[in-house]
Length: 110
Image (tube, rainbow, N blue to C red):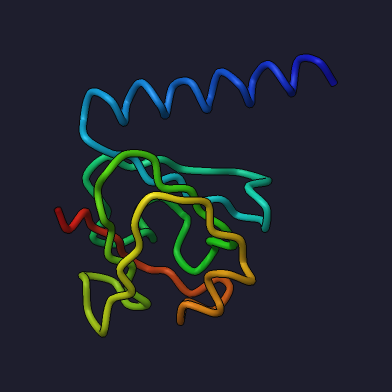
């Protein structure tokens, strides 16, 4: 249990360091409340199928002062949902127009 907590702490620290150096990081989580397998991006992804993470995001965390655009189709197609710094659970993403397991591409907007 302690190893898992330490691993999560180091992952969060890694994201904080990356955010400070690059201007921002978005972390996608396969399960709600930031659980399960995750991927972190500094610039974005044209097609999450390339990472075997298409339509698998149930929660996400944005660190840094950047805004990110989330698309329900690959190649940034469709109407994006723009989100800024914060922690977004499946319920919150649904409220903002991103149903569970619907994200296919992402990019930093500023």
